[in-house]
Image (cartoon, rainbow, N blue to C red; front, side, top):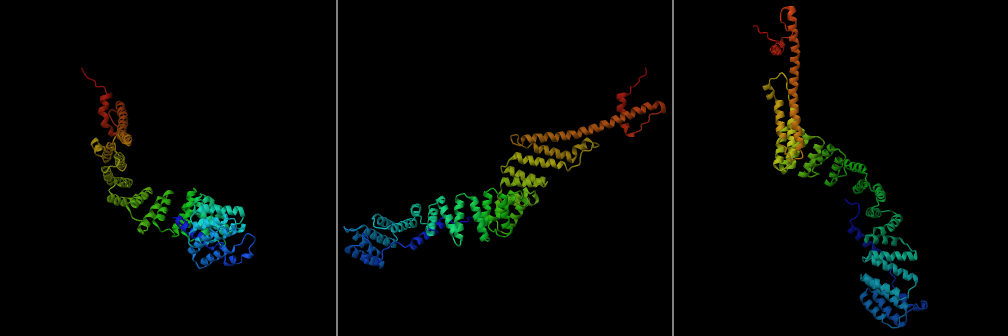
Length: 498
């Protein structure tokens, strides 16, 4: 996406304009009447009869477009031994005119320079030829040299015509000296009445290449005001905002273009997706990507499918990510996609399917440590869904309880994490944690049992103390009967008769 013409196209345009300017400039050709009336010339600026006759003959050839023949005739006159400066200057000008008509710009320039060196021209005639020389240099591809020659002429004479300004602008641009081109371009732009698209395009081109973002932004804003339907201008404006660190504003412009239906290419649509993702709106990014893929404006490639699933996972929309990942993993066979699928299934609590996906990823070379950590974590999290151990359970019941089996399964998975893996240390910590958790349950049951026993011991002791008064042993809590034998063995002294 570029706002300006490609450089080659711009060069062709400028070269064509330069030729047009040269063609439109009246080259100082000598007229028939100018030679025929030599008596009207000032002292020193007249032809001798012999030279005048020969030059008039050459002029007739020029007027009949017989330029090659004219050049032969003029070269013959130049060898006359008694030619004065005026005659030589005039003959060289006529040579230049014929070379020009034959499209031989190098020879034209040489002839015009010889005309000046011959010393027979008035100041204004010299000025005209110097302008012609500069223009011809530019037209023939000597952009920098021609521009310098034209600038020297302007500095010396103070003559600044609109055509010169345009020519200098174009010449410096052609030579890719944008810094030199800028002041002339700004004058050209300011003087343009009316201002056309080409004026704005060139200023935009120069400001962009010179890194003058503030001025470029001003030009682009003016252009948007004139041509609001041009999407390229809006794109350029968004790019300038982004490059200037104003990403949020660039996003708003891009979003406006998208919502207004101005963005249609895959590149532009993917830019919208990337903006939403960048600004932590993965769900919106995924929705747009899925919508445009369904509309076939974005290709349904494996790369795009992976991106779509990634966006859904970032948005925690794992249910929507899973079928996309299943398809992408199956079609590509890549380990990373199986791992991503396992992670999505893990986040959905589908531990068995997640485990299958992770094992496929491991078999295809994915990080075993990370995969087994997630498998083990999923198994452990399954324990949180199981009924807790009841201290009233028998030891056999405790061992066969689902929560006990889940803990053991989780420990087995954590033990699969390679010790050399980055996750090796974390796996060891998890194993210790689960074992401590299991031991805490056992300790709690032991504590609870001890509390009941100590309470019953107190009740049994009270029953023995009351036996003296009531004449019988009477327990207030029948469940304490189970602890009487132990109490007696510890605290009752058996009296043996002798």
